[in-house]
Length: 302
Image 1 (cartoon, helix red, strand yellow):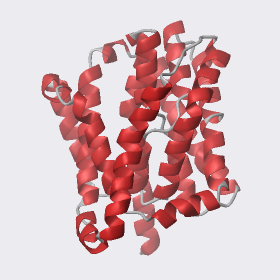
Image 2 (image 1 turned 90 degrees about the vertical axis):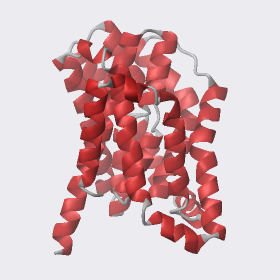
Image 3 (image 1 turned 135 degrees about the vertical axis):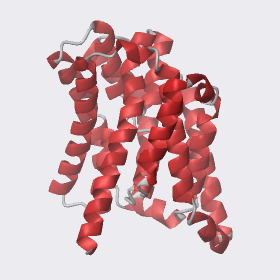
Image 4 (image 1 turned 180 degrees about the vertical axis):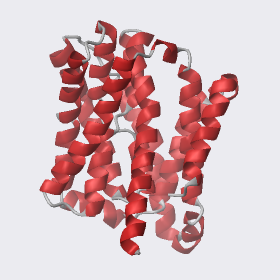
């Protein structure tokens, strides 16, 4: 990852702060931006890479188990520890009960971790979330919600599966031409993810006035502890380095877009606030993590 990435994020955050209307108009294009990123990532892997993950399922199931146990339980205990209001408590529980999202795939790609594993985890966790997300919300917060299964599957297909398959097929038939594009793709993905962070901030800058130190602490700890636990468990199980990084990213990064959608549909904007803040923070923390890993790699190479 280049060090220009943080500057791109800072640039779009400045625009979103001083001229939020400029970026908020792009909110309808976020799925397209994510789809384009997934298309590019599809060109960077082969079908055999995906097959390899399912032939060695312990990595996949370890990540999924941590995703749907560590994150909801952490959400519950952290919210109680910091004595959050009922609405924010519910918002954190909803966030913690969500599966992984496409942002984790982008960060995995930038970290040069195991992209096929990341994509597989996103797809499988989204499938299981139809049952597990409502279960955890009801069990921990005693609130019953319904997930629009058709919409969730449709969104996942068009943003993740469809562009990914297109990229895979294009690589299969035009590998040499694809390799030329892949030289520029990391820069393009950095631009898109920085732009998305700016758009998210511009859409939620009014909600951010209601942020408290307690809420920020819960969101920060929820994300950081998820990353650390994912990496620690993978290390104990002696997984390869790229798998450790991937599981850490997948566990620590939630589908905050789904969290916001469920919160607004079933409750209120205040309940959606934790997911809105998390959507900004988890991208920034993951980028810092990628920079740290890159720095360590450079030192090791020296």
